[in-house]
Structures are given as structure tokens and as C-alpha cells.
Image (cartoon, rainbow, N blue to C red; front, side, top):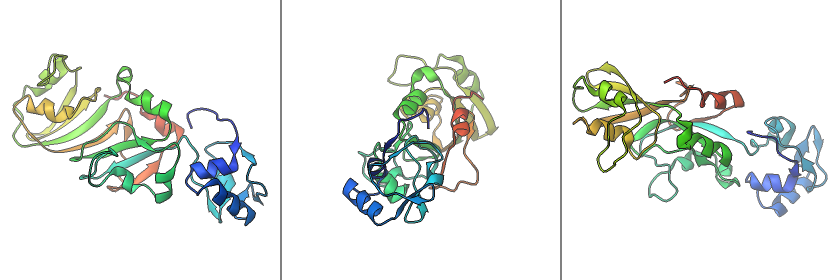
Length: 248
């Protein structure tokens, strides 16, 4: 959680975590199914201090409660899914556990990966953290691995690093970016901006085409290689701090 929060009513907390309406939460309490610090809760208006340790203290029907607000997830976004609620087709939000889709405030992606890009995607219900990460002033680095349709020319690295490349239809040059060539048609590109389809358009500006694109790092936070496509993991405060470390 990004900052200390005032204690909240238990029925409001559990309703906002998706456990049902306040009336339904009150019924759970009356049935003795809500236990705090090993003792059944007797009144739904009891106030509970929010902390990352809450799931160790509070259980519902014998199962630890879901994480409180301030949740940050690292998802291995699969291909074919979008990060917008407004687009048709499969959404990354469909991968969330059903109750997590009912949370209030809702979980939102921190920035986006397009439908044809896989890799590290962060989600949170912490609006302040979300805006801090996506703010252009933050200049957080993001690394992508690209497979290209044609061999690299050899001058792309210097062009991308120059800070003079202007994308088609724009007037403001891109910030310097770092290119590392892995093979004639494979490269890693680290950028600090998030313009529309930026990586694909950068290679298009050199006469090339991106066949596949995968993001494996945000700041100093790497995508866990053990995280399969479609899987996600809860990040602790130390992992979140890595996002703001620059390893570009």
C-alpha cells in the first residue's frame, strides 16, 4: 500500500473487495464466517485498520481475505488481449479472479500493451501510484524485445539514441532510446516514453516491420520468467520500488 489508510468499517471494506453487498456481508458476520485475529467478528460496523498484513489477520469462511486497496499486480499479458474496457474481444481484466473484477476502486492497467504485444503489465487500484508511473515526467524506462521482418540496417541504434527521430504524423522528436542488437532480426529497445505504438513506429521509420513484440522490463522490475502467459503475481512494496529504478 502506498500510504497509511484510516480504519474502515468492515462491511464497507468487504463490500468494496467484492464479497457482496453490505447486507450480504452483514449476513456473513451474523453467521460467524468472518474472523479477525482468530476471533469471530460480532458486528459488521467494526473498524479495521488497513495494512498489507490484513489477509493474515482476517478470514472469510476460513479463507484469508483478498488484499486490501493498494494492490499492485504484475501480469504476464498474453497475445490477443487488450487493456481497454471499451474494445471488443478478450480483455486482460477477464484474467482476474472473479471477485477482483468487482473491487471498488477497480483494478486498472498502468499504461497499456496493444493486442499484439505480450509481456509485463502492471495493474493497480492505487490511483496515485498509477499516475506517478505513467506521468511523462517520471521517464520510467521500458524494455521491449522485437523480432523484425527484415535484417537491421546497422544505423538504427545511432538514430534511436540521437533524440532527433520524429514519428510519422508527429512534430516532436522522440526522447533518446537505447537499442541492443541480439541478432540480424532480433533486438531489445528501451524507451522512456509511451507514445501510440511507439516501438513499432520507430522500426517502421527505418523501413522495417515488427513481427512480434514482448515487454520484459519496467524500470528495474523484470518479468518473472516463472510467470506463464496469463498469470499474475502480487507485488510487495520493494518490488514496486524497482519500477522507479532506472536500469536503461
